[in-house]
Length: 119
Image (cartoon, rainbow, N blue to C red; front, side):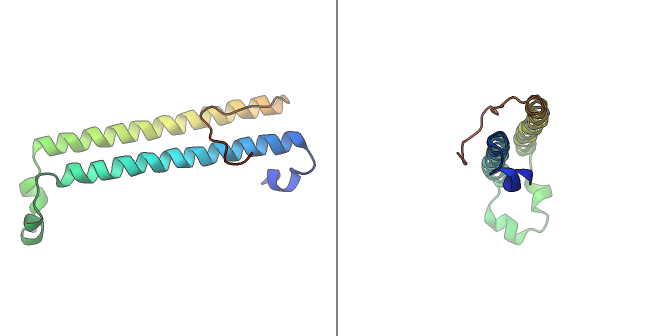
């Protein structure tokens, strides 16, 4: 990374390198929080109304125990998580391009919704 080798030479490079790193770390944190929320909800939706005895005794428990209500809940949770993740990635893509244009013009750019891990 250019920032790690050139941060001592230029305040501009140091500032923008920290901004990019903070932005990427923030997006990683947001993605992990999204996964930590979506995965348990998805698992609870799949396994609600299914007893553990049915899982242990019946080899086709998914076929016998999944109802339309469970499938619609699974679909809703999956769609919300997928659209949120896609929105996060599309936003990331456009913000990186916008920041690159601003930086190439010599302007300091602050990414929105960024947690300051490195100051």
